[in-house]
Length: 131
Image (cartoon, rainbow, N blue to C red; front, side, top):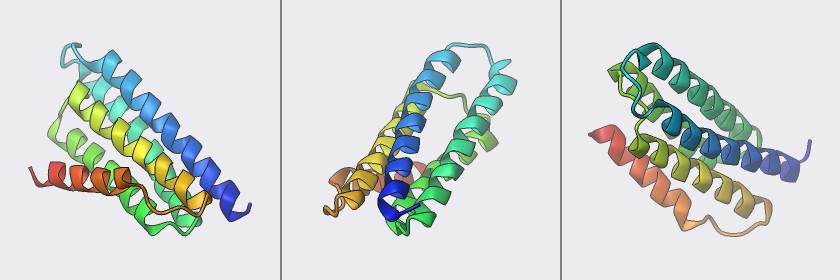
């Protein structure tokens, strides 16, 4: 598989994660914290998707995309460890970050400069982890 194909795959995986984050929040928000089991499963599923993004970014040689994928995973790990529910805010953060990763993959495949959304997502996730 060539670099462009890897980047296209990465873009598609990132868009899928963005869609899943939105659907997950809509399913999980408002459920009772029996959602402990449901939310953990949900977070685990999103985390697996994030791990796939990191692996794809590494395979494509895209360090900044790999960094963003790792940060997405860290935010999801933190939510799981603290027992946080998948709120609209968390889902929106993951959606924006996953879309930024997809935008970055598109830009890299087209040999364009890194989009601002990539830096913004890295900054947002880093700030969220510092809270």
